[in-house]
Image 1: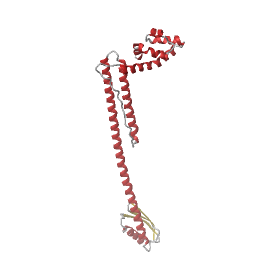
Image 2 (image 1 turned 45 degrees about the vertical axis):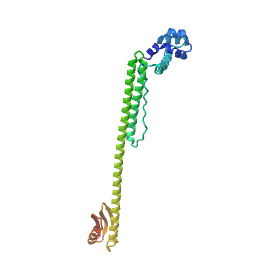
Image 3 (image 1 turned 180 degrees about the horizontal axis):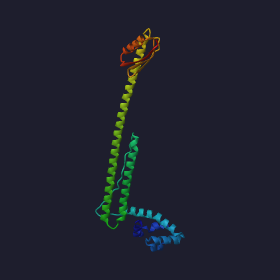
Image 4 (image 1 turned 135 degrees about the vertical axis):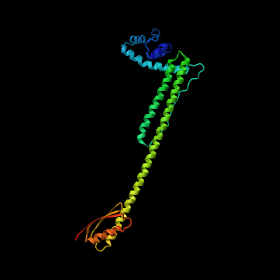
Length: 262
């Protein structure tokens, strides 16, 4: 398709061809008359290269020649009754996300939408270059392309807003989890302090007993339940240890595992 445009605008591109292949003459360019095979033959003749090399040269030149045609058309062509459409520019404000699980997905969404916008804009200019024969048809195609570009832009904006909303919800959920965990940690610390205080009071009560003070009874408290381990001089002393521990404020139960030595 590009070469059809080049052949149809050969008179405009003769100068660019001479810039590329300085050994070609004006007569050569007249003979070529926009024909690709003629151009390849003249390049082979003037430069003594192979057909493959000549075709490769033409392939590289074809893109720049087509681009020049498009630029000249955009800057000089006038559509009756229709102003030249302004190019559409898409911008996306950069924002930072604290949730790393959403960042990759959001980035991929923005990139995909941006590629669609750029591709649609490029298609609009290609339509301008292809539609030289019918002014009204070209204008309609460009309008459609611009409309599609705007649609893609709006969709990209919507995706960004939805992704940001999801991240905000995740942040709020994470904050709630942190708060709950903090409250649990404070509660656990408070329970631990309570157990330590109970243990100290039970040891003090046992130490004040004449028979139990010298026995080295081990006292442990977990969840306000007191466990007593070690020797007891007699059964009555062991039972008295339970009573003393139970009398301490905050004790919910006593697990007496004292071993009577007599």
